[in-house]
Amino acid sequence: MDNFNNSFPSGLLSSGSSVGSSDNHKFGGSIGTTSSNSNIFHLGMSLGVVGGGTSSNTNGAGVSMNPQQQAQSSNMLNMNMSGGTNMSHIPSSSSVGGGGSSTTNHNPNAQSTIDELLPLVMQLNNPDQREGVLLELSKKRESFNDLAPILWHTVGTVSALLQEIVSIYPLLSPPTLTAHASNRVCNALALLQCVASHQDTRSLFLAAHIPLYLYPFLNTQSKSRPFEYLRLTSLGVIGALVKMDDPDVINFLLQTEIIPLCLRIMETGSELSKTVATFIVQKILLDEIGLSYVCATAERFYAVSQVLNNMIGLLIQAPSVRLLKHIVRCYLRLSDNLRAREALKQCLPMSLRDDTFAKALRDDVTVKKWLSQLLNVVGPPIEGSGNVGMTGAPVGNALNRFSN
Image (tube, rainbow, N blue to C red; front, side, top):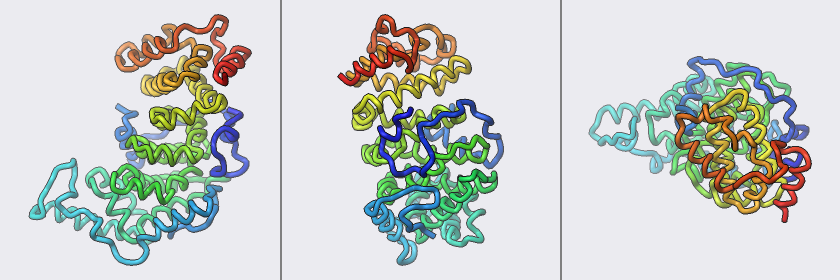
């Protein structure tokens, strides 16, 4: 992972933070089960991994935007700053309701819910009421299919959410984030996840470069519970983007440092954070442009495969089927690239070739099928490769095979 900063785009991370560093592979604590962590449940379910505005070129956490990016971001955010709520973009009461059920304008319950929702959204602009409103809206977001357009097209709401995000930056380094502050900003991130996943606001969300505001959270390394919760919720926003299988999303992310950020979390995060980060890398690889990007150079390929290999090594001690599922899928997708397939003959972990995970995968037909396909495509290991993983002379030989 020493080649991260040279192999992937740079300029978005704060100075002095090496994305490739992995000083500690052990997670020091897990996320507690409290009512404030309900966002984690919705995150896991939605991604399928569980059964005043800012205008500076560089923010306090070191996220840099070039002039073109800043202009685009400012233009998109300022669209909502010159008037009242643009009602032409806000769904009528007939289209707002829980569970995807359709209602009519004559339904008094539908009108009641929309009348209840709009004042709450407007109250986001009041700093004194914002904390309570964030909590209330984050609880209600599953009940309103079109909450995202309402949030985006109501004056000042996106800027209010970004204010919540940037207000946390001073607490990132040195790490002084409290549980209360983490819960509050995570409620704001939950609303941004709605905007990111909605078909009517996703492109606007990307055009405003809002994901860049989350990268300082992903770049933190503290193992405390508030920071882990913050990273996990931020991953949820990115996960909601890639889940849509939109090529524009992949193109945008590949211009940023999302891959090395995810790779570090895949090595050092909690199990759930590792799972979501691996899911994001998997979705990038499933896109043709994403696969070509990762396999464009030997350094990029080995940055990804080394992390996958390290994760397999840790899973031998503590198997996790849901995490192993995404790792195997990443390997299988990498094997679709001819040069990567040849390299995998040398560096695919032997624990995937033998019966190490047979017991863990006994009841998972899908993962067993993917693993069988992977082994059939890659073929037998090259003689003398052993189980060296990503270190030693055989890796150098595999690197030469990839480059040729």
